[in-house]
Amino acid sequence: MENFLEVAAHASMYGTAVAVFLVILVAALQGSTPPESPFPYRIPLDPEGTLELSWNVSYAQETIHFQLLVRGLQAGVLFGMSDRGELENADLAVLWTDGDSAYFGDAWSDQKGQIHLDAQQDYQLLQAQRTPQGLTLLFRRPFSTCDPRDYLIEDGTVHLVYGILEQPFSSLEAINTSGLRTGLQRVQYEPIVTKGNEALVHHMEVFQCAAGFESFPHFSGPCDSKMKPERLNYCRHVLAAWALGAKAFYYPEEAGLAFGGAGSSRFLRLEVHYHNPLKIQGRRDSSGIRLYYTATLRRFDAGIMELGLVYTPVMAIPPGEAAFVLTGYCTDKCTQLALPPSGIHIFASQLHTHLTGRKVVTVLARDGRERAIVNRDNHYSPHFQEIRMLKKVVSVHPGDVLITSCTYNTEDRTLATVGGFGILEEMCVNYVHYYPQTQLELCKSAVDPGFLQKYFHLVNRFNSEEVCTCPQTSVPEQFASVPWNSFSRDVLQALYGFAPLAMHCNKSSAVRFQGEWDLQPLPEIVSQLEVPAPTLLPKGLPPGRRDSSGIRLYYTATLRRFDAGIMELGLVYTPVMAIPPGEAAFVLQGPPSL
Image 1 (cartoon, rainbow, N blue to C red):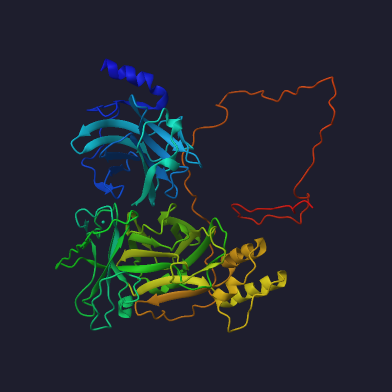
Image 2: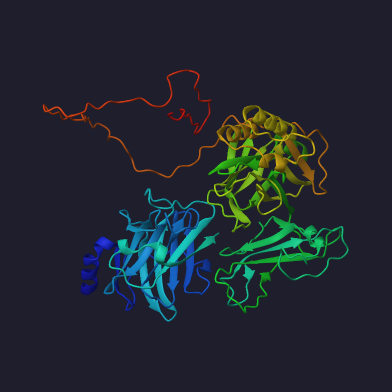
């Protein structure tokens, strides 16, 4: 014990010392064991099975306990989180050796991948233990740490990153992630996964086929195969979904999803999606999802409803956008007409976009005021989509509004990205699971097409390039010819923010509820929910403290060669430049110098 304390003191500048490398037996350093055991979540991090992560979430303590198993340890490992699954700008826990001693520390990487020790150590090592399987590290991390270098753990997708150190490093700062063997997992049901394929089976979905067909052809092959029978496209009603790292999906005790019986197809379609970056060959797989049913019917039949935007090209994202927002509405008129007087209760949600989606959120509004977040993912990944149980059931009453907003990044694209079914087109959808089941299957919107044509005419007035507005030209072709500049971008964003809606308030038969659904006004929201901010350390003077700070000017009696001057740049002080009310981030810009 004395030798260990001596090593810890010597290595304190690097983090928490573990002990002599490769001869660690048990090092219980500080803290306590996690509140629950065993760990309910477990995934392999890398396809070769070198790293296996288990974790336990405590919402009461706002803490996550991690258990990392390292098989065949070489010179260390790094593990952490980042916004988009990159090892640059990541929040990391690092185990490394200099060849003599081994260390554990809280670190971060800059935009070039250089590792730095964090001044605030928030990854707390609880135990390091050598087992027959390998080295096990037990550590914990609070959701929020008030450290600007740390990743804020919140509801939504968390992108986990890892790296394997294959040689000793003289110091933590000598490590650069660009030279490491690295990877990522996007972490967020009970699956039946073929043994040995745990790291390859990425996600699975079970769809029920349409009841209007008496038979469906058998097919086993790639989802995008040209040999896939077209009739399988009518198997799109989601019954179950599982994704890597998720547990079994349980319906609440009072509800169940009805399938089978009269009026229901007896055909199901299973999709298994694989992630095989190392292109491992020769594996056979028979993974799937086990469905449990009960002959004792529950009180309520559950339903699934689509919220968000209609799949239509009139909703588009300009190219080169870092964070362009599109919003779809389920209006008060539709919920007033389609929902029962007692309302419905949403208990689960599945968010969906295509490749450029970065954030998705659905908000419930009542009487013009936002009341609750149905589901939010600020770190959304199109490669990880699951049915997520809500921590709190959200009740929707007739007359309520459901607002679904998606944020997109098109910085790597040169043409507008239009809405549609193709993977290079975009969607903005929230599939909400609720009870009791109603006839309302789809409650979505899009901008009125006539107002979009007015936009194209306006672009033509302010630009020399012509956008064809003739009837035979499709909307995607029109968007492709728009000269994208600050005017055309900002006006399109403004159009989506005020133009009337084309509403789709549809039954399960795809027929709209009776009523007028074109040229519908946008719901008026007079009060928005505040976005919760992480708790910050107190700033400013403590109560009762006085201050006489200032700036000291130094001068010289020996005049220098040139007198310096100060020049004002920017906007003239004039009322012709104005900021509209209610703007969160409105930019005014002066003309470039000539």
